[in-house]
Image (cartoon, rainbow, N blue to C red; front, side):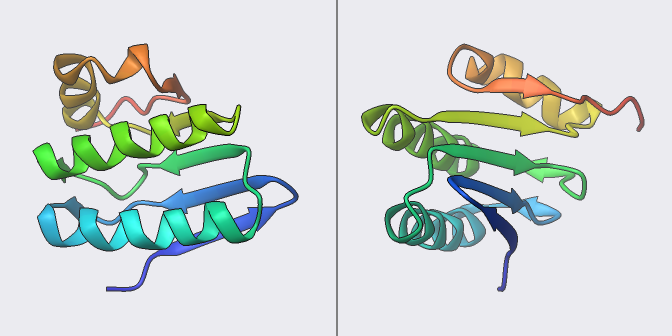
Length: 107
C-alpha cells in the first residue's frame, strides 16, 4: 500500500487511507518514522479526509508518532475527521495528545 504525503521545510502531511487497520498502521508507522528522521520533521499533520475506519492499531500508531514528535519538540495535528473517526479519537483520548483541527461534518 502506498501512502500519499507532502513535505515542506520541517513539516510532513500524511493523507491517511480509507481504512487504518493493523497492516496499514504498520506501513504508516515505518514510512512516517523514516520521513520524520530523514527530513527533520517538527510538525506532523494527519489528513483524515478519506478515512472511514480506524482500529486500535491505528490509534497505537498515532500515539507512537505523537510520542516520537514529543521527543524532538515537535507537534502533531489531525484534520478533516469525519463524525465516525472523531468519535474514535474522543473515545481513545487522542485529543489530549493530538490537536484536532478542521473537522468535517458529514456522514
